[in-house]
Image (cartoon, rainbow over all chains, first blue to last red; front, side, top):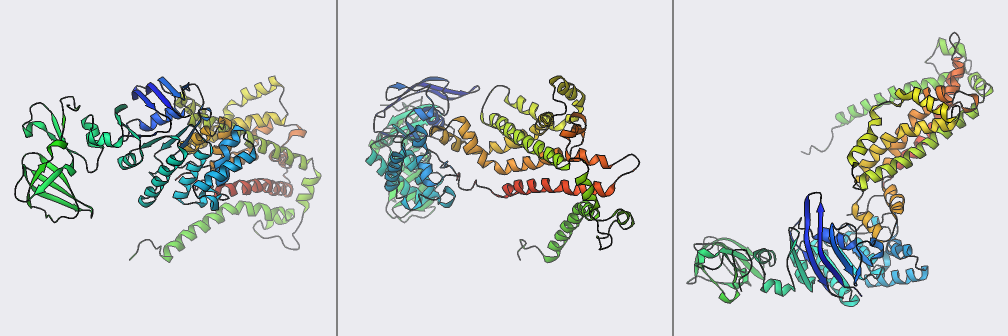
Length: 333
Length: 279
């Protein structure tokens, strides 16, 4: 209960094509995250799945059922919005129960499901309150609760954590991960934050300019990026992308090396460079070097290290962890 | 030194200006009311004086209540005003929702077309309206007035409400759609409560000209049974003799219903329940 199948979804606003043919298969119980820069079409794709936007062409199947002509309420989905979108005039309890009530469920059943969902999210003390009397984190939990109560085939999350502050974001992230484990439901989640994507997803879909760049598990995307876009997007700090000609590699156009796959030494190494900036994060030390061979280079060292600006250092990449990309920006294998 | 603090001198000037404006705005109203409580000689001899024991007189009110069916005129005015506001708000809000919510061909053009009514006075079409009402057999009915006033109120209602409805969060409406609310339920249960302050504004702006209008009652419904208060008061104003006591008393009485309506709507202006809906 809860598979999703998208076939060549296209969406255009006037002459501007936002989605340029999306094919995707989501299996039952998977946690799939759409990630990409602003304007890549990830939210539009979610809205097409929800039925809030009509695709210009293509097919959407939920559980093998074609739903292109089905209204959102009948698709068996629930959605959590970035802005919470709680009904301001209803109490928390009524907010959560409205969907079931509209479907004509008996009152006892609605009450039981609301009680169960509010128990899972520890919302019991707030059931009689209105959204205006809740904090941001509580409101987002109510929005999630509203989705749980519907017991949907598909959970859709539209950047649910973007309006929360950093500490709350981590907590709510944990809560969503826990929910996914206990409900075993299929979840589709949109974010522009690659940390959320890496930490929550079974499968990440990287979107760029209306097209899927790569689909894979977080570690697949990290270890085997299919092209320079994914290579640059996944991982923080960003992968160093160096023109291959500067390294004397004739076949490739670009060579990528992650900041954590470079070792530093004060005495000798492959690339001589000067430290231009140091960031001490405690667990990590991030150094920005200007080297003669590669230009600007980011290096990530684990633990605390003492380097100063203008120090001369030698960087040595781990050859096995280098990524080589061809003229079409795709990886060379 | 903080510039945020307003000096007492400056706030004094602000209050002076506001008080001055209040006096100017209230002056004719107060003058009407105090003179309506005086006898005729006192009105002309000392128009600005308060009624004293000698000059106090309720003759004006007595005349008004004796002459003609003044309660009936009030009733007509109230029915016309309230029903017209209701329809102008209902249809205006619906049109505004359609214009702000749905993408369709000619959306902008339709919005402009509906807003043109703000710039072109409806009275220019009086002859055509009268001919239409005669043809439809609606002359001397309150329906005729209600139809005209609804049409008169719509452009402003649509213009203001569609701007406000654009500010209602799309996510909220979409959440409603996912929860299985119909478009009507979304309109009535989610959007209307959120634009209530705007509705009150429109109601006040629509109400005053309808209540005070003399033109259309005179032309479309001058019959005794359909007279409004403003038209009814005219019997006391003659070409040669004007019964000032009665005119002032009628006008004083006419202030109160509209004042009560205003108080009802203006409370809505202040109350906002949008907080906590989004963000």
